[in-house]
Amino acid sequence: MAYKHGAYGEITKSKAVAAAQADTVLVYVGTAPVHLISGYSAAGIINTPVRLRNMDEARATFGYLDDWDSYTLCEAFAEHFNNSVANSGPIYVINVLDPDTHKDTQVTLSNQDLSDGPVKISNGHNVILDTVGVTGKVKGTNFDVSYDAEEDVVIVTPITTLTATETITYYPIKVSLVTSTTIIGAVNADGTSTGLAAIKQLYPKYNAVPNLIAVPGWSDTPAVYTAMVAASQKINGHWEAFVIADIPANSTVDTIAKAKAWQTTNGYTSERSKVCWPKKIDGSGKVYHLSTTCAATMLRVDLSHESVPMESPSNKEIMATGQYFGAGVSNPGYDQVEVNDLNEVGITSLCFWDGRWVLWGPHTAAYKFGTSMDPRGIFDVNFRMLEFITNGFQRRHGVEIDGPMTLGLKDSIINAEQEELDRLVGLGAIIGDPTVEFLESANSTNDIMQGDFVFDIQFTNTPPFKSGTARVCYTDDGFAAYFGGE
Image 1 (cartoon, rainbow, N blue to C red):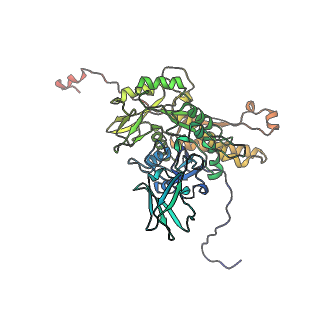
Image 2: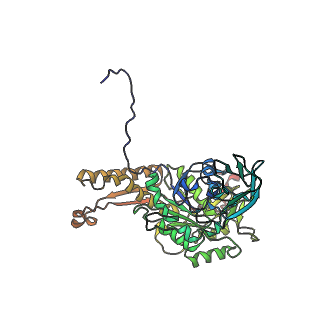
Image 3: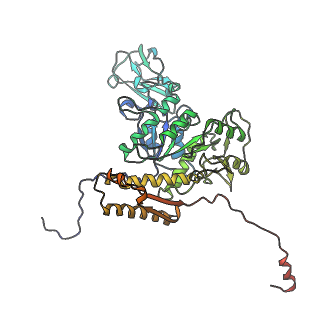
């Protein structure tokens, strides 16, 4: 060993570790204008999770268009990365739009003059960029293709000498071919997965545990909501996530009474979810699904508490100037008292309060005021804290599986989990004296012989300050002051 005198550092080979979640992992499933990205087929942006940290990255990876009805993920990009209240990220997105499949019939443009410069194809946002060709010519050698978002044109630029009578062909995108079945997706016979089913790819790809799922533009379809709730459970056989969904806001569901009836009729009542109504509108006139805003606010609030989901997004300021009930609907909107009528059946909304627009509603979709229910479903934080602790136990001890369960390891697991619970008490996420126990009654000799061990964890998460009432009464005691009394 060489002579050393001083302080030194050395970079060594990495060691694999269990998944360490540094932030809340929010997954969106939807459509993005990937047909405007050159090389989309090889870019790994179809039916696979992709992490995004800012708007520039979102635009470069998936493209961006203001047509949020067609390209639902662009709404999420704007909510997270162009938010006047606060940006939040990263987010993980799964785009299901596949230009190889979701395309219209080929368009042929004859007698195009490329002899004296480029040709522009109007309505460029509909053109699948990689399908643009010049008959008999080679892309990259004889011509090049680009998209100009400002003019909304696809530009075909000659590289070599071309003529005034060239034929240009291309395929238009056909987003209408994307259906709720596309969003729900499936695990195929060859092992590939699509849509919501592709969430399982996130953990092995990014070593991150998904814990929030949103599908704006589609979650108000009952089949999609049902699939979201199913997809949120035992991801990769382990992880639990929470769902944020919408009730439709349109001319059919344009009042509180209709929203409540729709929720009941369509079964939007899972304790594993928050359901939102109506939509919101911002100062520029853009309309957002409230599920997108709720998800982004949850992420922002979690990150303010070391990624612990201890605080509801309710009563947090959002980027909005009003409630939106659908095109042509004349409903002027509701105040806080009226919105509470939604909250009492587990519907999250928005209202104007204390000079700002805020989300309003701390409950899960299972909540029904005045009914007997499992208390874990009363507040969103109740269920999310259960998921947080369940996921955390698996992350912390997954690497120990198949090693010898010594008495020392048993005690080590108990001590580690108790330390985590104590940390959460210190953070204010849970209260009282949470416990971790290894009970003989829960661990039979046969179970231990099979290598199966159960640890019982009990805790009480900190409840939200849902309401506060000052009880004020009149008294005549003060009149004594006129006579020098104290």
